[in-house]
Length: 182
Image (cartoon, rainbow, N blue to C red; front, side, top):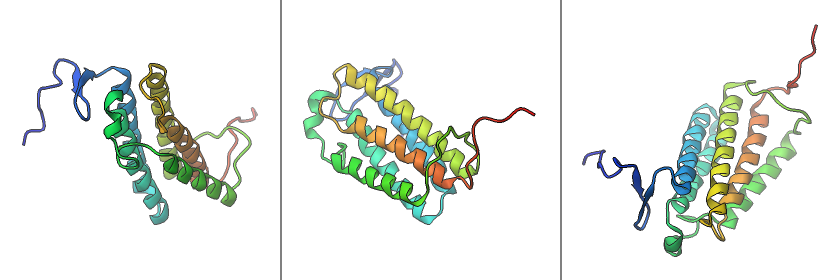
């Protein structure tokens, strides 16, 4: 099997269940940003302890579900299976539970935080920023009419919130973002 197909050489890509679109259309932009988030969570997972690593792997798998939904033309989304190739409200609720649990364990700072307190915290901040980019791309897709009734926008919003909380939990201490001049 060859890795290159040459079918994308003219700037188009194939969608799940058929159809082709330009690679810079809102759908490929959205699922491409989600793919970047999967990779960013992979970096964080390498740095995480066992419990957090399992949770990050679950998030990566969820993001494959999100990507599948985004890579499917709206008229073909009825073929998608909830939780397998279509995001669900249960996926969102799971994230909300994780957020609530993490916040209960460690109070959040009341000021801006400069990333870089630890390698894991910094990796989680990169993942958070990447998820926010994916969220912006998904908003563009939704505004163009490509995501009616989808849980993807809410899922990505909660995921960015969770990732912020996880980054705070990974930081050994809080440091204010502003410094006093001497």
